[in-house]
Image 1 (cartoon, rainbow, N blue to C red):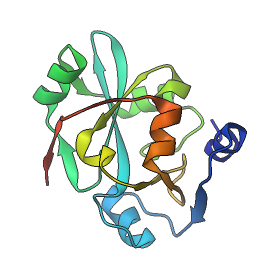
Image 2: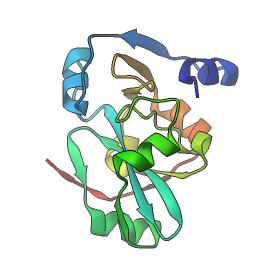
Image 3: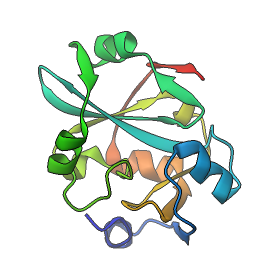
Amino acid sequence: MDVQKYLDAQGVKFELVRHEQAFSAQEVAATEHVTGHMFAKTVIVQGAGGAHMLVLPASRHVDMRAAGDFIGNSVKLADEKDLRALFPDCEVGAEPPFGSQYGMATYVDESLAAMGEIVFRAGTHDQTIRMRYEDFAGLEQPAVGRFTVED
């Protein structure tokens, strides 16, 4: 998936930012000069229903029990092999938050849903997208709930 082409085709306003390679979500947030609360990281989990995409602020981490309760079955983190298979067009760890485009449900933590704007990886470790959360939610139609705790 080319995120920029997808958003252009949907008529959504966004800003594509190129930056030095950064691997952790907090590093990217610092590079982009945004708080970890605004930077949307993705975490892929596997459960009885297959793969699920969790989208949460970089400043938080997944409570696996709460995530499983929210999704409706117990979950575990996907491994690198799973990520390569699920996202063949992305660098591992740089998956954009559009699970629907990869055949999986997307779940957003309510703390991220409260943001006016979000920043997220565009499939690489040196590009990010900045857009309004409302536009993201309009496209993705994620389930919103609580499944994180603060770092």
